[in-house]
Amino acid sequence: MSAGTTEPTAMAGAAVGATTTGLTGRAARAAAVRELPVKDSEEAWTPEELAEVRSELMTEVDRLTRQLDDATSSFSALVRSSAEGSGDDQVDHGATTAGREHEMTIVNNARDLLEQTQRALVRMSSGAYGVCESCSGAVGKARLQAFPRVTLCMPCKSQAERR
Image (cartoon, rainbow, N blue to C red):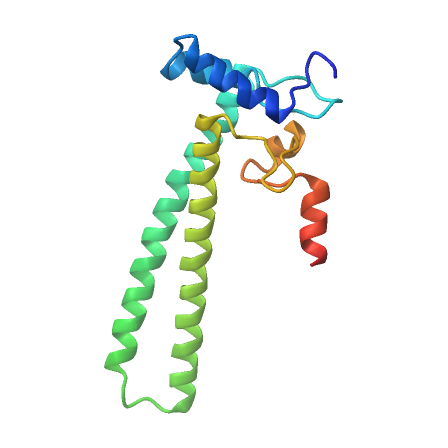
């Protein structure tokens, strides 16, 4: 194992060690940052890199929260307006139903993305960021920098998509 590689089990042990040595809060999280798993071919996470990803995720939470609020308002208005048009013909009713389903899809997608983004922030704070939820291996720093919400390494993601 190279100096920049950390096994998930070592990461978990380091997080426990940080707690038992008296490090708390920011210091414990900073210690965990040094222990985030990376692939053998990757350099360890720097605090700056992790701060950049965290900032992107927090910006995304704000954006998705606004989008979810807007989509929820739009959906509510659509439901109210469809109740008022009870004398519409079948075509109008079909168009209203299609619009309602479209708005529901937008709301559900925004909600799912918001949950995934918040979960990534929680995993980052807990020291579990970058650990594959399926095999407990390293997700890969490059993969996380490209897609900060991912929770599976490429082999596990490929296997999940084949199912």
